[in-house]
Length: 195
Image 1 (cartoon, rainbow, N blue to C red):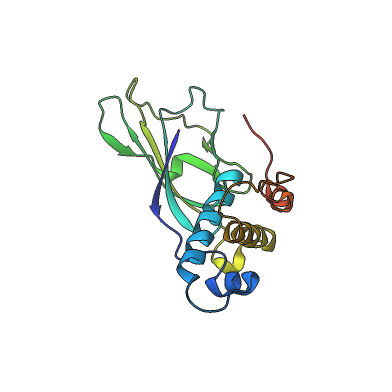
Image 2: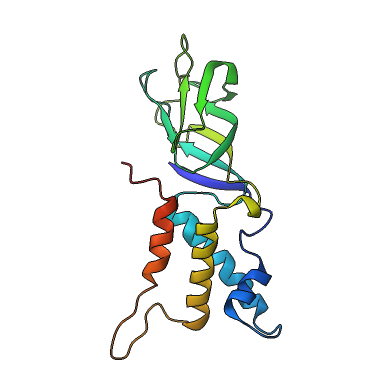
């Protein structure tokens, strides 16, 4: 299973002005650095939670379809807004697009799920071909205004921590890791572990 970003988000979930206000930074000297921290914090949050915050388009590559029609493909990039296309390499190695009339997409569950409709089966893919199946999808909460406040606050806390401390830990009489507060905020939006 592999992911490829097709269309990145058009904006960050936290604005530069919000981050600068949170940091109480005066002047323009550090703004480029702060903007970079916002992006890094967003990527960290998305990676920890397997979520897309602001709408983006992705491709998910899997080596083949499940063997049984009742089995599902889980799409672990929440929340999924839509499935744009399901493409696969057929037995001859030619690219085909699977008709959306033959499969159902459960976009309510997390992770989202894909399965053939009643009366249909998974298409046959080329044997032993890596990434024989490509699922193009749109994921994310919407624009920045739609991202949960807990996740925005976690991003601001990470930006503040990284802005104040350029190393991963503080040393001295005690060792201080990334604030536990961030983990607590992320836990509010976590969808739990899965195999």
